Length: 281
Image (spheres, rainbow, N blue to C red):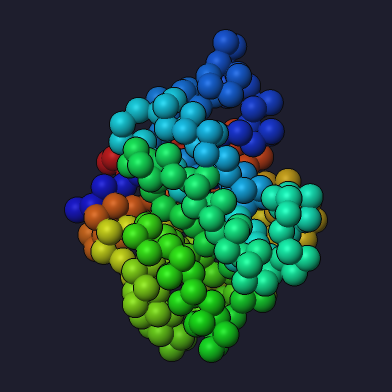
């Protein structure tokens, strides 16, 4: 049976910080991370999607966490084909920010930024979450192949947000494609009544790692504010649906990351604590 690590998709989210979950005296940057890492063995870094990571910052993350703690780092937006604000890009890039020279530099900066996590064994995985318009086909296959070349030797997991990747006969082909690159598949939980809903399938495409990201079941997914999209309090019944699925993943992968993305107040950390308890019994 593989090891199951449960945590949240952020320890710095503004709503979590203001929720009171962090005690007095541990609300500065160092105190928050140390407090979180005493309670969970894994966390997802979402700030690296919005801006390139700084080597000094990730070095501090490594220093402030115990051995065995790991970070899943979300790939920078430009690297997954998302819109990217020019203000967050490093100076001196060519005007064509999606051209080969600009991408080479962005990849270099991202690689340098996560180096301390890799060097200290604290990099759980780099998460490539592709946009809803990234759908199965030759262009997507070529893009994934390029990502594989850039990330050779890294632990990588992939989340597709277009549901066709995991529907019907495509499910097996998708798992095979990820397996060919050594990428771990990300299983997701979300409201299934939405047209854009990704099926809650649990493929294992990498024997080293499987990942589950629980986004909540808000009917506002894909619309409204971030708070509207991710506002959800998981019930025990909803969490229990995932207990046998997670255990089944652990029977096929060496390690399973279960991460809650309901970043409104302390709902993610409370759901993670409850899921951990359910998995322990």
